[in-house]
Length: 167
Length: 289
Ligand SMILES: Cc1cc2nc3c(=O)[nH]c(=O)nc-3n(C[C@H](O)[C@H](O)[C@H](O)COP(=O)(O)OP(=O)(O)OC[C@H]3O[C@@H](n4cnc5c(N)ncnc54)[C@H](O)[C@@H]3O)c2cc1C
Ligand code: FES
Ligand code: FES
Image (cartoon, rainbow over all chains, first blue to last red; front, side, top):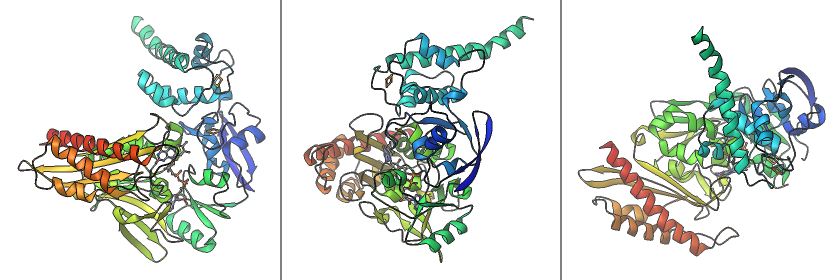
């Protein structure tokens, strides 16, 4: 067993892990964060996607020991107390999900994209979501939701500046 | 997953020492996107993994006296973002972008791609067309091997037990050389190449020189289409000549039939993609004149 410390959704955690434990197993079994899903377990489906140090990765292909000292964000870390993350609101408003199994991974891939490029083209959104398979929706409403969330986030970012200009 | 031990190397000499200590039961772990899949599928059962991801020096991308050195640990995403690679070897950026999807590109490394050495590896053709070489650390010192000699068979390279791939070097003479990379898969995202090709060439006094054609997924290892390259030498560029080069490259290759495509279909792809890659490289040469 190895001792590791990492930040999960803003909270510092010290954990004891077996060498062959993946980050996905660590999150689900030891942190009780079951938002990241086990789909294929080999990198193909994206259901296990989480954000590590700002980048979307397949949690099924990273060993837990490799997450030592790093910052991990899962779907549980997105919503604030008062409201959902703009991506979660947009996914709901656009009716983007059906069974929802792909949702956490899909939303985290979209978040990594919007954090880096708040105004992505449709092609950039498709590229960012290419590693997230959805068996239900046909993808169109997922892409619309990412565009809508981008607008919300951009409006929130420019809002205060405009208000300051009006003073 | 089968049980194994993991040792996290903090620097290069520690990585080499750990590999030496645990040979022949040790495997290098980088992004894990090939190795962990193989372990999960039971294809490999190393008792010890030497995790090299903490070794920062192995991920550096820099210009050196020899050329552009891309550390083995550079992820495909880091290559896509690198201003140096974009400026000096944009075909490597094009190739990196076709690998898997974002999540895999954020984990998967150039070194892991080269060392796994499947015939369809997408990081291979462009370095082949740019006369790149691999910089390898052995327990008794460094050695360099041309990428053209690096691959021995499917999933086999010149790396010996206990050796570490440190960097891929694109030699100074090849920096800025007009190059194009094209890949054809069954889908746009998350698809292995049925055929991939990189072509590079220079134009001097109206004729072509230093033409290179690197092909993947068309033989047990990556190949250069040497006969096709030869007919281009010292000739003025033309569509007819590129079409002929495509036909010759298709003859030189030894594609197989598998569940993704037939050998005949792959030959047709080689012909068309080689021709297109040459035309694209020429267009890029035009922009530079
Ligand atoms: C969903 C998915 C899609 C993919 N799509 C593509 C694709 O489109 N095109 C493509 O080419 N590949 C693809 N791959 C394969 C894989 O992502 C790449 O080959 C990747 O670059 C491997 O790098 P890694 O760091 O993950 O290697 P690892 O899995 O860590 O290691 C791979 C092998 O290389 C050895 N190794 C790694 N680094 C070194 C080093 N520095 N020195 C010595 N040995 C070393 C390891 O021991 C192991 O044998 C895909 C994989 C997945 C899971
Ligand atoms: S469970 Fe990780 S990609 Fe499918
Ligand atoms: S909503 Fe069911 S898999 Fe995407």
